[in-house]
Length: 373
Image (cartoon, rainbow, N blue to C red):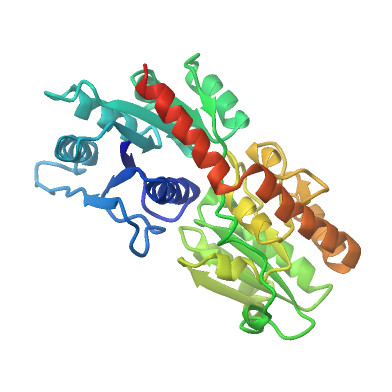
C-alpha cells in the first residue's frame, strides 16, 4: 500500500504514534509519505520507503491567520497524485480530516480513501468547543474509517460530538525493543548518586498534563528519601514547574531536560514514572515507561486505566491528589519486593498487549477493510 500520513509533528503522543506507525509500516514493505509543516520529531535516521513532504504556508497581509488547512489540502492533493497514494491516514480530526476531504474532492481525487485516528484533545477539548463541533463531526462523517486509541475516547467522542459513527478502537503501541529495561548503570550515574532514587516525567508540558503536580509529588518524595527528578519535554507550563521547584526548595534535584529524541535512554534508568494528567485518552508515556520496566503513578477516570492496571503496574490516584500520589510513590520505592513485582508486571503488560508489531498488524487489517469499501 501507498499511505500518506499527516500529524502534528511536535512533541506529543499523537505525533509519536503517527511517526512510529509510519516507520513500522515502511519496514513491512509499504510506501509511506509524511505530509506536515515540519518533519515529525520521531522521524530520525534513514528508513527505506519513507518520504517527507513539507507544507508551505504563505503569509499574505490579507490573512490575519495563514490558512494552513488549505495549504495542507493542496499539498495532500499533490502528493496523492504524484505518488499514487491509496489513502490518507490523518491523526487529529481538526483540521486534518477536513483537509484530506478537500484534497479528495479536487479533480481526480475520488478514489482516495481517508482514515482518521482520534487521539483525545481533538475531541475532548477542540471538538467539544462549539466553534469546532460541527466541522469535527463532519470530518468523521466523510472519513472512510475512524479509529480511536481507547474505548474511553470512543465513548467521549460519541458523547461530545453526539455522533453514532462507526469507530474502531486500536490502542497505542510501543517499540518494546527500543523501550526496554537496561542492565548498565551508566544511565543512572549521569543523574543520581548511589542510593538516590530517580523519578521521571515525560510530556508536552501543556496544562492538561499538570506538571506542577509532578513537582509537588516529587517534593514530598524528596522529603522522605534522596531522589532526583527528570522532567523530559517542553511546553507552556515549564516555567510554572521551574518556579514551583524553586519555591519548594527542590530545584537543584530536578533536571529540566527539554524535548529529546532518545527518550528511552531517559526513562529506562528511572525507578518510578509520574504522569498526573487531568485526563489521558490512553497515556502513551505511561506505556513507554512500563515497557522499560518502570512502575507508574498516574490518574483515574480516563484511558489510562486501559493501559495500567491499578495496583499491578503502579498506582492510579484521583486527579490533583498529590498527597495520595506521593504516598503511593513512597510505598513503591521503599518496598523492594513490591517494586520488583511492579517492574516485571509493567514490562510483561507492554509486551503482551501493546507491542508494536501486534498493533501495526491491526492497522494493516483496518486499512485493507477500508480499501475494500
